[in-house]
Amino acid sequence: MHFIITDAWLAKSRAIHLSGTKLLLALLGLSLALMLSAASLYHWVFLTGAREGWPVFGTLVRLVTKDEFEQRDRYMRENVEAMARKVGEMQAKLLQLEALGERVSGLAGVNPAELRTTPGRGGALVSGHPLTVDELRQALADLDQIADHRVDILTVVESRLFDQKVRTLMIPTQHPVTAGHLGSPFGWRIDPFTGGSALHTGLDFQSDPGTPIAAAAGGVVVTQAWHPQFGNLVEIDHGNGLLTRYAHTSRAYVHRGDLVKRGQRIADVGSTGRSTGPHLHFEVLVEGIPQDPRKFLDAGANLQRLEVAAARPAVPPVVQRAGR
Image 1 (spheres, one colour):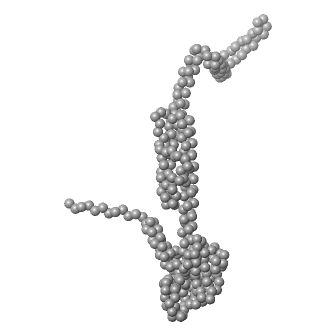
Image 2 (cartoon, helix red, strand yellow):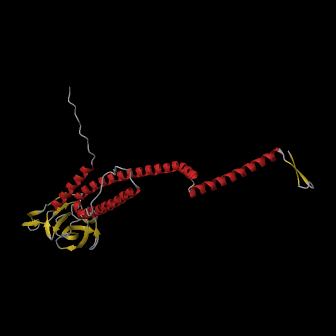
Image 3 (cartoon, one colour):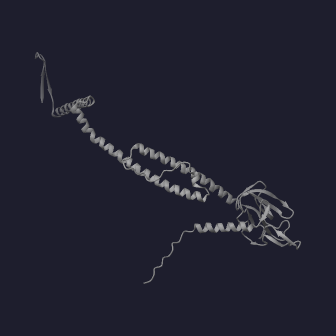
């Protein structure tokens, strides 16, 4: 395609040759320029009409944005309803946690009513109308307050249970000698040296020399010394006026002031002091008064049997069908 361009006085002329490719590119460029100009003009007119409230453009704006607003509102409403269901589930779980906390509080000797400083709110989140964001925010704030209160209760219960556990560990209920048999019991007997009646203030565990002796409970070693009658003696203070005595030992592994735990090896069986043979003389004193150690050791054995029974899986009862 040829174009001839001349000026107004026909003094000059210029010929332009356009091939098919150049003509196509020119048409595409012109079309793009027209589209951009039309879009810019439409955008300017549309925004101006919507901002100034022209009747026709205002109606168009409402028609265009109505569906978008409805979709956004529906999306937000669905999200709020889903969050409300989650809040209801959290409230139900908090109720279960409250019931569990009350049962554990009873085991710890804590009255849950004394720990309720604020009235609790519970139950599923049910409303007769669609929930608003403010209502959902208030429900979350209530849940946060209830959760803090539950944490306070369980913290107190944990402290009580820990105290009970410590007190249990400080009571001499573990056998000090596992390899051996019981000799002289607690009570009146014939003294083997004098032949007269005498009060035997402990238990004698006959065993081989060198047999390990374990602490019957945790505590502090208050005595590790030689005694004319008890020989090589170890005494442990368990607090609350409780003291255990381990006599006639051949060797001690602890010293005065040491902290020992339940079951720790503190000495070996021997025959030192006023003794007729290798054995452990074991005493339990409460406020300095000798007690029968059997009461403590039997209580520990019973507690251990209960713990073993509780750890066993429950066996479902066998249902027998009556014959026809």
